[in-house]
Picture 1 (cartoon, rainbow, N blue to C red):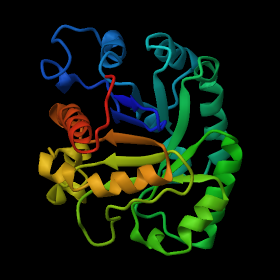
Picture 2 (cartoon, rainbow, N blue to C red):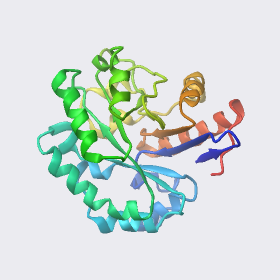
Picture 3 (tube, one colour):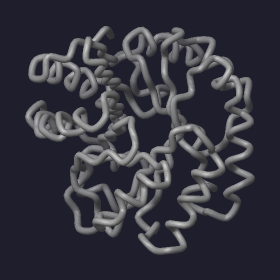
Picture 4 (cartoon, rainbow, N blue to C red):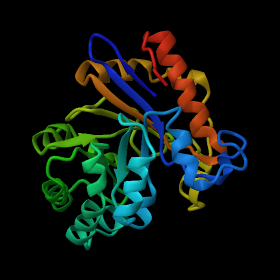
Length: 272
């Protein structure tokens, strides 16, 4: 879902991943082959986060097929592999392999950034700040969106550090638990970026996989973000908003809810 107006504001709303079997009958037709899910998804949304690359790096033909199945103006954000963000041992090798696989996305001009989601154990210290700078150097001109889970990154000097090193900050909505990041309206380099993970406090730390994201936002909870989104738009005319609360199609519902809210409250018109 995207919006464009004479002020060149461009808000794109999508989901974190698209190939979920439990979206059948809720979003996808029940008998739709998996190979056709992305094409179907792209009829309703203009952007998506590719999460599968976090678990293993697809070969270039997978990304080529993704590019071929989507409209010319469709935009991909690709999540970097866990070797880069969680293990942080084979940084150069994993990133080089991912960038090589992504070449078809470059050719189709559909790659609009990489997402690096760092774990709670990734603390704000000199070693990790150097790691961020080196990671950005390796990806070159590709926008690198960095998401932190540890509130040690809320120090006042961090936004200037990210800005100076060409890194884009990811704002998040997640449970209000000690040590996590609260909602913000931070832009260090455009585009602006927001991820909604849900507010499932009970399941957040217990390691039950996707259950931590099993949460449906009410419209009132989404409206809490209106001021922050307005502030982000003042800093960046382009903003990505992704919903990662994917179990049982909740991300689809809330993405559509957010479109409706921004349309009625901020007069943003969405083409799809």
